[in-house]
Image 1 (cartoon, helix red, strand yellow):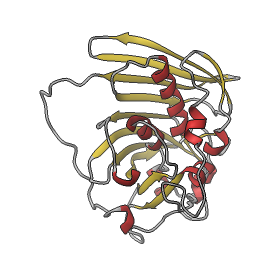
Image 2 (spheres, one colour):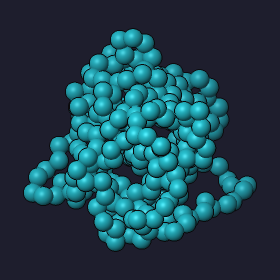
Image 3 (cartoon, one colour):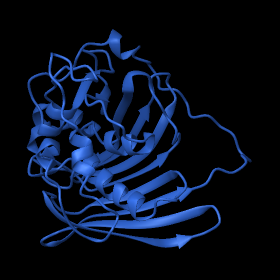
Length: 288
């Protein structure tokens, strides 16, 4: 989610149930490719003509903003090894008119660190630090734990969040429940999610785009309805070659601590077989 006040989430998501090829007799436009087409890898201005399909309030959805910055790094330096980790600061709202830059901060034998930024007319709107690293022989092995209370396959769960939500959800995602309804889940929100577009994103770009799709778990414990604002997002990519059946991923946001107007959130995502693919952390401002 982006770094601005977003009251939409206080009322939940809206979902349009489509299959991944468009469903309901309609073809879904290639909005992801259109969104990324202006990004050449060369520093300078760009116009995101498809930004309206990815808006959350008055700014570009955080996952889409991060993907723009990641694509800039990829296209500026096309021979990089796989992405392993990222640190992203959501500084200000993003719209159609932006300025992009990318630079290699350090390049070693196995690890390359890249900084990319997105600016608007007022200055820096997003800053990102990407860690790309080649695979090496493992000297430590520990598979990530599978999620507790596995919800079953997406098809076994009802469509979620009908009738409400920001534009980026309505236009681009199918959401299904990933938790039992009617039970107290504390400060955790878990849902199955997939993109409705039949896209050609590489696996890591897809994770960057989808990894921030859920609202913060702190929403479940807010005493009063009010806006929320993601300030940053740090994550590790656990499987840069992931291909989950049907494009479905189980996304979870859980507040680890909430007080003084902020929530520390853990963001995780698993594939359809229960293998964790992202482990993340986010600071969220909670207003109201």
